[in-house]
Structures are given as C-alpha cells and as structure tokens.
Image: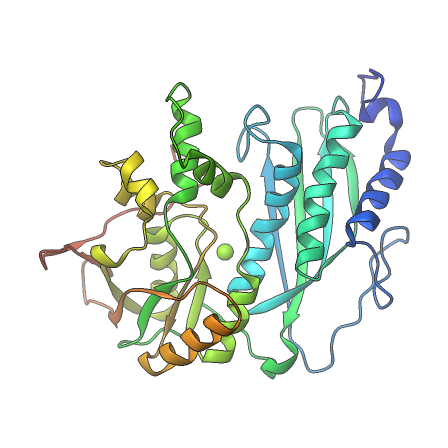
Amino acid sequence: MAVERPGTVAALGEFALIDRLAAVLAEAGAAAAPELLGIGDDAAVWTPTPGARGVITTDSLIAGVHFRLDWTGWRDLGHKALAVNLSDVAAMGARPRLAVVSLGLTGGEAVADLLDLYRGLGALAARHGAVVAGGDVVASPDRLGLHVTVVGESWPDAGGRLLTRDGARPGDLVAVSGPLGLAAAGLRLLLDGGRPAAAGDGALLAAHHRPEPRVAYGRALIEAGASAAIDLSDGLWGDLARLCARSGVGARIDAAALPVPDRVRDRFPDAWLDLAARGGEDYELLFTLPPAALEPLRARCAAADLPAPAVIGAIRPAPASGAPIVLRRPDGAEEPVVGGAFDHFGT
Ligand SMILES: [Mg+2]
C-alpha cells in the first residue's frame, strides 16, 4: 500500500481500519450476538440451530466490472455487496445467519468511504437478522474488490426444508415476487449518461443501486409449498433457463403477464421487454408452484405485507428438441426464446 495521503487506508493501517469497521457494525446492530463470536478471533464461530440445514454462498464485486465508483455511493455499494448474497440465501428458502467480508483495497481509499460502505452493509445485515462475523483486508493494488460470503440455514419451522432449482414439474405455475426491469432500466439510464432526467428515474436508479433481497418472500414460498426457485440476477430468460435445465422441464411465459412497471415502459418504449427479460439484477425471486399452492401463497404474502405473486406462465414438459422456453405474445402467437443469459465472460 504505497499511497499514504492523510485519511486513506494506507495512512491508517490495516488493524486500525478493522477496529473502525467493527465499530460501525456494532453501531448498525450487525456485530457479534451472544451465540456468535464476532470479529477479533482467528475464525468466526456460530451455533447452528438443531435440525436446520445450512447453506453457504459467496459473491464478489470488482470495481470496473460489477460497479463504477463514479456512479455508485459507498453506502449503496456496501448494501449491494451483501444484498446479492442474501438474495441467493432467499432463493434457497433459507434465512441468513452471518456474513464474512474480504476487502481487496488499493490503499488509496478514504477511510471515511469505507466506513460508509460498512454502514450500508451493516444496516442491511441487521434488517435481516444477520451479523458480519469477520473477514479479511488485503492489498489489491490494481482495483477495489469486495468478496462476501454468507452462511444461512433453513427456517426454524421448515423442518430442514430448502428450496432448490430442480423441483419444477409440468403443470406448475411460473411466478415472480415483484416487478421486472427496474434495475436494468436504471443501469441503462446511467449508461446513457446525458439523457435528461424524468419523473420516476429515481426509482429506477434506486432499484439498480439498492436491490432489496426477498428473504421473507423465500420463507413464504417454503411455507406455501413452492416447488423450485432461483433469484433473478442475470435476467428472466437466463435464470429461467437454468431452473428449467435443473428441473428437466420447459416453460411458456406470457408477455402480457410480465409485471413491468409503467415507468419502465414509458421511459423505454422500444426496449422494455428486453430490459425485463434480459436485463438482470432484479433480485426478485423466480419460482414455480403447483396451482393449488397459489392461494396459500397469496394469503401468506398478504399477511406478511409482501407483494402478491405475479404469475407469468406455466411449466411444460421439456421439448424433444428446440428451445425449452417459449414466449406467448398477446395475440397468442408463440415464439422460442433463444439466448438471453448474461455471460460473465461473454463479449
Ligand atoms: Mg442466484
């Protein structure tokens, strides 16, 4: 860490920085709980709930690849780095218990910015009953990187059940937990740069910067008897294709049923379907359920103040050949969906 301007990580040093970050987490209510030994020992310790099944997931955000610091506030960045992991836990129908965070720092970062990052991270963790139990700070001379790992477990009353991608069966409904295309529309606004601001743009940008993981929704899905789930990180077509492949089924999606908000359609009249179906980063849950489970799920969502499920199609047997997913246009015509997954190494 060569740069030592006052107020930077390099000037403060690794150990003092870790103390400051730990203090921010304590303020946020996301530091050690009695049964969780937090930051300060060689490893984090937690007590699994008897009978629960554990889940673990990890995700990395790299500057210039997954975020741009000229667009993204530090607090939002901390929120999002944890949110993408909590979303994976939610998609398993599980609850988060603890997170560990590794920061790859150039050394030139302002300490105040990193404290903000941890404020965003800590607030989200506390809201979902998780603690940040440790991590690592390493030199990453090239660029900033955030690496978050979350440990979770099945909900206490779920009898060890989790929600996987392989349970969808022909005849099941396909549904989502909330609107599609908001985050992709927000990203498009940022990419467009000079586009003049319009009413509603704030909501699009917020969806991109601060996705809210559907942890409580995952619990409702487990309780109502959903058959499979995945979180929408890479876009509807890509993530639905993954679910279908794991379940060995196909799907029909109704274009008219896609819950795409007016502000997305109005702002991008030619691109809204693409934003909703291929855009990615919605972090809503995409799930399947037997038709008989729909009413129980609606009731649970209403009771828990969650959005009502939006049914967007149905599961079919996998076709012998051709595309497993078809899009039904409002006029009834069906067209195969080809391509669509966001490929992290694509061009
Ligand atoms: Mg996922």
